[in-house]
Length: 205
Image (cartoon, rainbow, N blue to C red; front, side, top):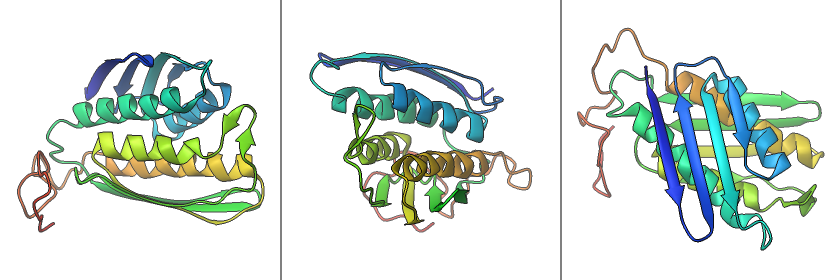
C-alpha cells in the first residue's frame, strides 16, 4: 500500500497529514478553516486518495500560514507515498464543469515542481478566507509533491464554483496520474531512467 504520514511543526503551524494513494476517497480533515476543509474533502473524494489532516495554526493572525503549510504537508505526504515513482501513469488531466464554470487542470508528476495558475476571481473572500490564498495552496502542493501543475479557469462567475472546480480538477488529474500502469510494471515513466532528485538539471523526458 502506498501510504505516508508527514508531521510539520513550526512557530506558525503544527500539521499532521496522512495519505493512502490506493484508498477509497475517505477523508478526515480539520484545519480550523471551514472552506479549506471543504476543498480538501473534495480533493480526497474525487482522487480516491484517503486523506487525514490535523492542522493548528496562527489563525488569529490570518489564514495564510495554515493554508500554505497544509499544502506543503499534503504534497510531501504524496511525494513520500509515491517513493521513486516507478510504474505510475505520471500524467493526468481533467476538464471540470460546475454549473456555469469550466476549469482545466493538467498534471505531470515529474518531480520538477512548476505551477501555472490562470484563475481570476471577482470576490476577495470566500467566507473568512482570502481567495488569493488558493494560489498559495496550489503552489505549496506543487512544490512539495514534485508536480508540474497547470490550472486554468476557462470561464465562470461564481467564486465558490471556480475555486471548487480547481480542487476537483486536481483530484481527477491525480487519480489518473498516480495509477499503476500495468504495461509499465516497475519501470520509471521517463527516458532519463529516474524521477528522483532530478534537481535543476535538464531532463529528457
